[in-house]
Image (tube, rainbow, N blue to C red; front, side, top):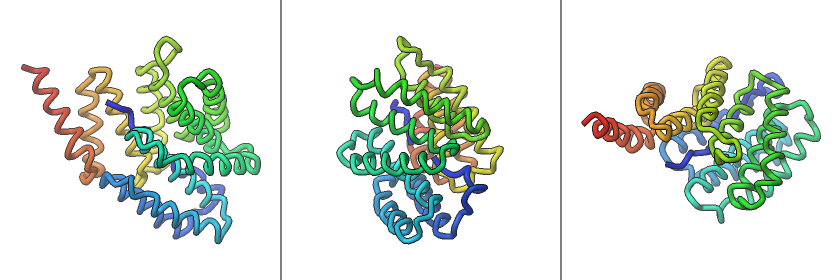
Length: 249
């Protein structure tokens, strides 16, 4: 089962969340839980138009957040041809924000993710992109140990890196759990698609490690918090129930 790589907002202290930003985040979230991330580009276009009017850097970060989720969706579902314009433009935005805010932890986590995306579509470049990704992950965590985003990227890196190169699904579990705790500690749960996606990644990692009870606990948590999460309700949770039944026979 593929790990669904699908960053949000720990930066309220830097930029206040505008009404438009809240509306856009809610739209993205509703499409996410309905299994309609393929419809995100319409919302992303609205977000870019809003940013072009305001030139608000918080809104630009939110645009990047949406790019991040959509690119992850495209890679997961083998739709890479749809993502390249977002990948290229996103790199420009990331470099702009890093230059302007060199102490902004989340931007380094985003930069690490972009290196990860590049490796996903060009694995032969992993020798170059891999160290760059880890450098930015470590920078993100160093700048803010209370932000979940660096830990998400650390978990993703551990998950996808082959064991022969040091990757570990067990370490991925650890870092997904840390990021989830930080989302919850910082009250970043409500209508936050990335929080739920991180829970989903955690559950799927448990499944890959054949810890079905661990996965079941996470799926139950997801459905308690968001009963309408279509992917979990209609597919992943029922599939896991069947696996558990077969295992118990």
